[in-house]
Amino acid sequence: MSWLEEGWRHVWLPYAQMQTAPLPLPVARTEGSRIFLEDGWVLVDGIASWWTACHGYNHPHIQQAVRAQLERLPHVMFGGLGHEPAYRLATRLAKLMPDPLNRVFFTDSGSVAVEVAVKIAVQARLNRGERGRTKILAFTNGYHGDTLGTMAICDPEEGMHSLFAGLLPEHPVVPLPRDAASVVAFEACLEQHAGTLAAIIVEPLVQGAGGMVLHQPEVLKRLRAAADYYGLTLIFDEIFTGFGRTGTMFAFQQAGVVPDIITLSKALTGGTLPLAATIASDELFAAFLSDSPATALMHGPTFMANALGCAAANASLDLFETEPRLDQAAAISAALAAGLEPCRGLPGVKDVRVLGAIGVVELHAIADPAALRMALVAEGVWIRPFRNILYLTPALTIGAEELAILCGAICKVLKK
Ligand SMILES: *Cc1c(COP(=O)(O)O)cnc(C)c1O
Image 1 (cartoon, rainbow, N blue to C red):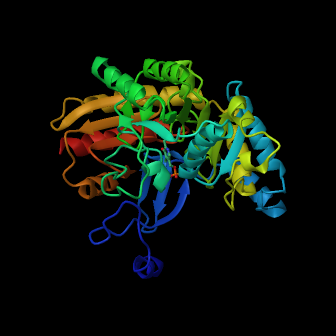
Image 2 (cartoon, rainbow, N blue to C red):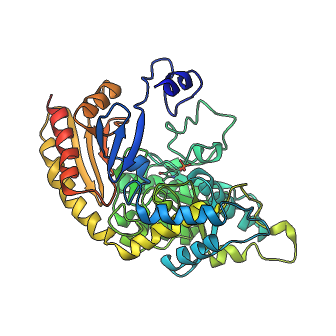
């Protein structure tokens, strides 16, 4: 594999200590829920490539749509020029959302979609002449991206707030209000910062990259009530939870709570191309309307609304309409609950939990994540342990047998 050894001297990997990072597994091709390595070894994929490949890899309907779009129009700038895939996608996304969420801003990554959400929340106030409200209330264990603006609203430890002090803006971060003590702390924080807050941001129902930490829908109701009381914009970051992952098309539906902004990415294109969307309410959009260019939303990534990405996203939405993805998510949920339950009693296991098509085995600690990962690879599965958890977020199209292989491999490796 000369490309790997040669490129290894030049590539910088994500979240990796490059001095000790092992060579990645060279992938030759993908199909469905399988990853085929160059050496012939085949892995059942437990992660769907960071939760993106919701229909499995190489879905023919998405491939066909991207191919056709590539022939016609791969990309044109979005300022002043329009194309059907983006305008159709905006219409379809708005139709999937509850009524006040009607305005779609396209970007090219989840982090940037969150940056835009924050910018909308803050600039809407500036446009209305309300100055000094630039703070975002965020939560511990939260994750909203790796750019500087989003790091500042991640969990303080994960977002390296003290290490990067001086570079990052400072926002109040508190535990989610899920019990008596955290409710008191949350309300005290609101009282203290009420005059400077613009918004509250949360990943609804499950904080993903922060450790797959679940919370009840009531927590989201509480956030909505607080946002209403203090006049704050409520942002639901559904980049992980969107598109069936929690069992409903979007997580907010399980709480019966409508936020003012929703961010989407990850599974938006079915795992084929980078694309993200920030969907804002009519009221927020109206705050940008005036006779002056000064109140316009000042944002515009070069590759925003890329036509290939939008074609893939439209094809992905077709599949949600024509194939029983939510039924599949329910079946996965039951299989994960049954398949991971045997782990519960094992030494070192702290918790086993399932929500929708997310299965989590939380350990007290993982001493050597790389060794654990390789033990799982030897069992023929691709699962990436992080922090102190092993989790499964498979494609919603995964077969029952493949799911059994994933759960069995986790149980087997943890027994050793
Ligand atoms: C992954 C993720 C992001 C960041 O998306 P990128 O495309 O990696 O920038 C933001 N929010 C949540 C909830 C995510 O899971």
